[in-house]
Length: 384
Image (cartoon, rainbow, N blue to C red; front, side, top):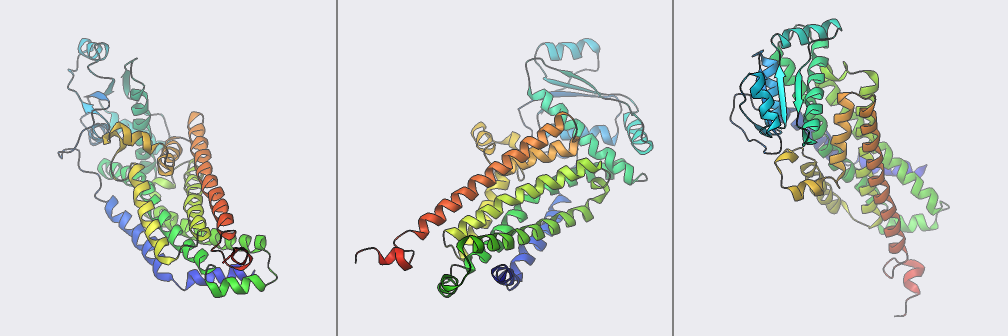
């Protein structure tokens, strides 16, 4: 295991990358999270994807936060609080999603959450022509589930605090894709690049270690680094947002951590690809930062996908961070029944991404090893 130990020593000699990409970026995520969601009364953007209406008979902090949550995903339409007006709004297509918040909802909902009982339910009406309305209703229920979880752990907290906690925990989970990607690609890329140095390659060539054995040791070292990065970033999140994380059911929390862990395999495969191509430290830094920014943008971390053009939304579905978000939303909502299927689908897609990149890396490494510029027998066989 000398090669594995050497690889880990290489990473240990570059602590600045771990400090910046793991520590600093994670703390930046916590800082941004504290102000990423504007108050419900502030002016903001609106998406024209799903026209909706909220009949708020409770007029509470929780009901207003739900309305603000919906405003980030659709266009608010005013509908009178009358049975005929509500029916006409949905029947004529004025709205696709109608939400009625009953009086006393906040008090009853939070009390039931803290007592472990069944609280009041929201009344919803869907348009039969809009599948998007079903998705919006699922997102509302997931949002309320986070509020319920926070209320269990902090029974004395005000509704405003509980709402802010629910919003923050989801954002941090999505933000973590950026530091995970950058830290793993750069750190493991440096590890892999150390074996591309001429002197190291010469020593390896005359050693008794087989190519397969060397590859497995490098892979083991890279996996250790990736797991360390994942553990630190997830640990920071659990410490900062433990009020919602630890009140999730054990299966739900396990699903959240598992989805994030599977996602780590993708930057790990990218770093392996860079190593197979012979890339150095500067290339690993560049690729790690650009890849992390692009993937998190297309995943909807910086800007909601609902606000992006149709072409961008289509492209986003072919990126791993998009599926990371799908898996996290399914896990946070309820990792049972159809939600469990959503988690499994997201994990399967993420594994396919990692496998595709890893196979590409193997092919690229094989082609490079047998190329004219590879050195050794391959180069000597070429007429000069």
